[in-house]
Length: 247
Image 1 (cartoon, one colour):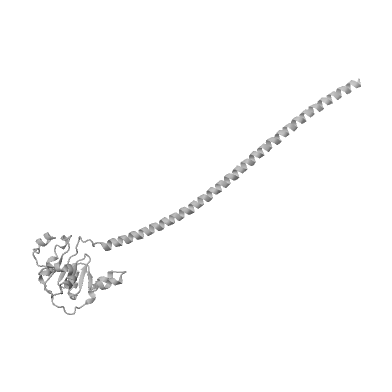
Image 2 (cartoon, rainbow, N blue to C red; image 1 turned 90 degrees about the vertical axis):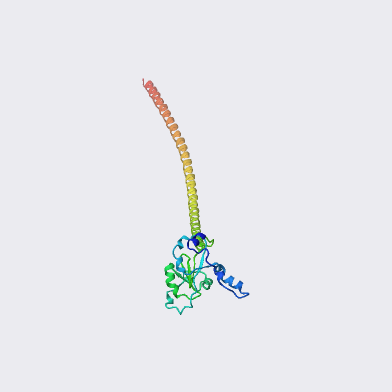
């Protein structure tokens, strides 16, 4: 930052606090309102700062130009777009942004700057502020830079987390339903296995009964054959005895 000022012969330029006089007992009030603006660097023309602004990436500088006469009622005030229009969700913030308008870049800000009242300012997308007779550059290394972006990222992460949690709950419900279906299927398999085991037992019993009946049939057939042989022997003996008697 010092080198940037030295290249523009501004390292020895007076600061605003060196140029003003404050009535007795009002020092604190003035210091409270102006705050860091008391360190503003006085320059002859603010336009000489336009070139090379992109080179200043760290530190915050405020410049004050020559005295600006009281402006006449500015025409075409409708061209000024309030910065509050791009802020939503906190109505209490609106008074803090009163008199602050937005511009796409420094060129547009300079064009619209002729319509500003003494207490108003313009701010570009990059945070450069322009008021009647003064220009303030944002502090590229300030800790508060990117707070809104980080808050938005946190909100997005919170929404992603909620979405993932909902997906997790849905998957857990689906897993629970699948587990219940699996348990029911396992119970059906066990029932089927029990029925199959019962059927196999019945088959074994029927096979045993069949074997027993078959054995009895074979025994009956064997006895029938024995009786048939006995009857045949007896018939032959009777026939022999008849022949003997016939002689």
